Amino acid sequence: MADLLLRRAGRVFGVELDQPACIVVRDGHVVAHVRETDLTSATLEDLGLSAGSAPELDAAGRAVIPGFVDAHTHLVFAGDRADEFAARLAGEPYEAGGILRTVAATRSATKDDLVDGILRRAAQCLAGGTTTIEVKSGYGLETETELRSLQAIAAARLSTPADLVPTFLGAHLDPEPGYIDMLVEEMLPACAPLAESCDAFCDVGALSVESSRRVLEAGLAHGLTPRIHAEELANTGGGLLAAEIGCASADHLIHASPQDAEALASAGVVAVLLPATSFCLRSTYAPARLFLDAGCTIALGTDCNPGTSYTTSMSFVIAVACSELGLSADEAVRAATRGGAAALRRSDVGHLGPGALADIVVLGGDHWVDIAYHPGMDTIANVVKSGAVVR
Image (cartoon, rainbow, N blue to C red; front, top):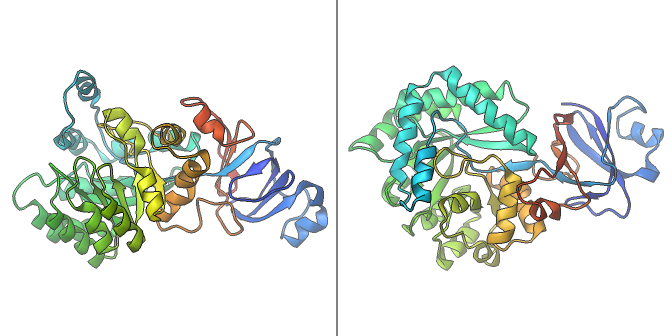
């Protein structure tokens, strides 16, 4: 937690400015936005800082946005599935069972191996402006490896400036008879203390609605926030289940119906859309406008994983969301920041209002439309986490 004066911000996402301003940061939190012409020693003292006491970062008139909040990743895994990706390029269909290849590699990995992998990917996220990252387990499918995966996330949290938010996804598949019983009775009690949320992959080739309900209700009994993978491969009822249970988020939603969108909106469930996955799978994109028209909050995530979306770039996700989901630049940036925060039930990130964590991205140009205008290019000049400049 650091003090900082971010000087001469030309535009600040979500903040009305009529001239360049300074974002004043104390103890890692935004305390005020002050016009550059009004920035005096007396003003700083009123805000709890003395002149010359805080480092300065010059935005030089460039656009400033909150740090990205990636609401859906699978950063903890071992192994590689590049050959599977190549096979899909040759026309073979995606099947959820490909997850089992990563399960085998992850079971063979040590905790140190997993920590190293998380830290490498988290560093890439942070360099790309992502300051808060939801991280799922789910490549263990047995108590020992699921627990080791969550322990690796906990260890990695101590060694990266990025904020890692752990989710238990033992219900990534239902690989054998009796697995859900074991998950509820053995795995979940062991893993729950290391997680904030409980997720289930409710879809063709994964869990049924009934099994998903059982897992998520058991997670609730352990104090875990429910969230769900739903309607990615087909419409199987996961969206309606999310609304029934009151999940924090329903993710993917490619095959969601108008009824699903209305139910999610009524229940306050955030629709987390993952366009990079559709891009990599060359599949249909989620109907973003359907959710917005229904009154849903939408979020964006990378779905970073070794099988279907091996990217850490929220900038790329924003570009695809604009070109393929039909979002405006403002809608996409909001979904990648405040929307992600809503999916994680965090009020202290995803915006730059007073009281928020000073997780700040200074862009290379004077408007955030550049993120979509320059797809695949590095449009980020600086990244600040809790007031400390990390890029």
